[in-house]
Image (cartoon, rainbow, N blue to C red):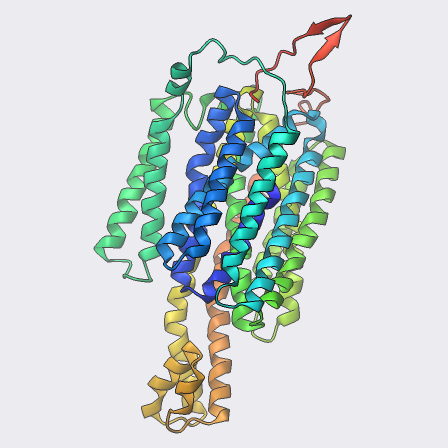
Length: 532
């Protein structure tokens, strides 16, 4: 299932060849937005109702339906709607990270999460290669075929869960409650406020600088109302309920565990800021500057995930061997930040450097996801392990939703000013008559070769100068994404040093054994507080 989920990310950047960037960003954002809203409540329900298996199956089936809807899309609305349905499977993904951890000794959780990350990276490698090949053979509709492949992956995930996962019944502290009482504990109010706030905020960020000015009333209204809804969500979780999405038990543990959990949430948000800058905008940088062939674009991005897959094993081993997440997490963020800063220096002739810097980030990216999830699951009570993991995943998705919109708006704003300025200047210096510059800029920007041939005064030298200026405008526009992201990496490096010591909790105890235990010929019921 993890492989299926990560393969979803692969197709969205390549859709930008058919849809404009500001529209493409919603194809990507809708997926992470659904996860940010639903992951915590789905995880909470799983803890309360002991229903991990059937939630995974149900969410995956909804994703199958979304994959069936997407290929027939003739409008952005239908495609975004399909992505929303696929987002249900994304929202249940935290449970896929919970189950292996709770059935293994706590000491080995870093390696367990490293193994999960290998599956994720395999999906992130196979997905782009598949859609790259499909788009290469059919530039217009190749991505549609990929949705059918994705549907098959979700179906395989469903079959695998049904056949291979048969956990024993657990006893929890909610066993005495009726179904309606359990539903009453579900945080529908908080989820509603979170959904409203995030949707409105993302809408405002998407509209601003693209369809409308930032001072336009439509933009301001959605941003302000969305911010108020999110503030209301925070106030409600703090004072309105103790068992909501941000369950108060997550912050009240002995020692420094509560602080460690809060820091892990913050660090996961920062990881999302860095990770999705690379995943969503490195393919755009590659397409703009170095390669138009869709398969070669994908191949240039593979070192990031290949190196990340190997490095995850290294970071997991280091964490397990020395029983700490703090130092390896700091090192991972430091390497990611260095790679992010290096990406901001890329010029149109730095083809090899771009691949090298992507590989550098891959070394670091293996650390945050596995170690933060490990830290969260070690620092929280097992009765809330799924809730804690869901909230952490939601923090990452929140960063993805917010910063994909911010990055796209910042890049689009730069493109709108730099392309006309750079191309016009280059054309004038190459000798193009002033009367032809406006038409020339439009033709170069849209890569309309037929229009170029009909512009008075255009020569091959002028076209070459205009093309070089266009690439430089692209380079100077997309670099803003990495300029914005790099400082967040610095903050993550500093914050990781304040994590608590987890040595005492990294022991050989198992929170949810997959078999019933027996002793002295009598069956002994394991006293566990987690759900299935």
